[in-house]
Amino acid sequence: MFRSKRTILSKKLWRLRVHDEARSEIENEKEEDQELKSTLHSMLKRLKEHQLEILLNSIEGRGGEVTDCVLMPKQEMKIGRRSVEPHLLMCEVFRWRNLARKQDVGKLIWCTKAEQGHICCNPYHYSLIMEIDTPTPPMSDLDLENFSRKESPKEPISTETGGTPSYLRAIQGDSQSNSGRLNYWCNVAYWEHRQRVGRLFTVTNDYVNIFQQLAHGDGMSLGILQSDDQCLESVKRTREKIGFGLTLSRVDEAVWMYNRSDFPIFVNSPTLDDAWSRTFIVHKVPPGYSVKIFDYQQSLILEQTRDRGSLDGPFDPNAIRISFAKGWGTTYSRQIVTSCPCWLEILLRTTDR
Image 1 (spheres, rainbow, N blue to C red):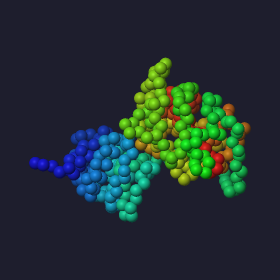
Image 2 (image 1 turned 90 degrees about the horizontal axis):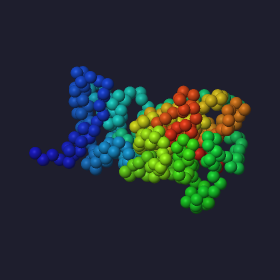
Image 3 (image 1 turned 120 degrees about the horizontal axis):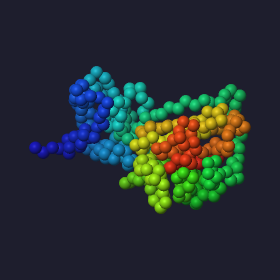
Image 4 (image 1 turned 90 degrees about the vertical axis):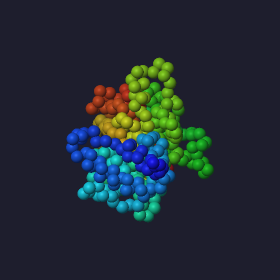
């Protein structure tokens, strides 16, 4: 007659599971669902009520708000004849119903809690990893430790628009550490076609969320920057697709991008290009995927090996371009990024690495 809070939370979680739309109802879906339900409930029994609440908030909000880790013993769970690790089970139930067994799933940067013998089972602390194979220049004759540091140009500007300084000589005081040294790792410019909207956003934390609108958003809100005055219809439609946007993070000697939106995003980066090609490559990143979009060591190698004479037009080795929902380049109708309705320019600071 009176159901416990734990029972109510478990039932709510089960109703939030993702469904396999490709499968027919006349197949053995009900049988599989019963096995999955039994395994999931057995798993949820190991969690405390406050952990169930965290899990529910995370799944109901579809990862829009960064929630705490949910730890449980790292012990494989049985579903029929197969075994699955608990964090992969949660990802399969609540995010990717057809998660392949060999699919590479990685932790997101805000998944920080760890205990020996335990693993985080918050499905929105994980993403699918997108691997991009890029040709690397020969390194046999290179001595990385003796690479010369080229000074940045006095005032390099955006290679696309001529309007955004790539290196800032003066930054506001809050971007400096106590020692007086600059401690930011990138600046972000938001563009609508050829028009930059708002000021540069300086990133000092390990990661930053860039989004259109979030109830509890922390990071760069594009919605605050935008105005509907004389706004093109294509821009309005694209804004509606930005949603939760993306997360940029610097991890070790690399920059990663996680697509938090419901639509693909497109990226071009110097270290994802073919170093020997005269054209650039734009990569499509589906929702829920993370991809390494810049490698500092590889960038250093490219600085020493790239044939500048083979490049068409200006080139900035430390600038990344990201477009929401619309691609550009040789395989798309839009040839240049300034034809995209809503896009970002990520200006990396690489001095004093």
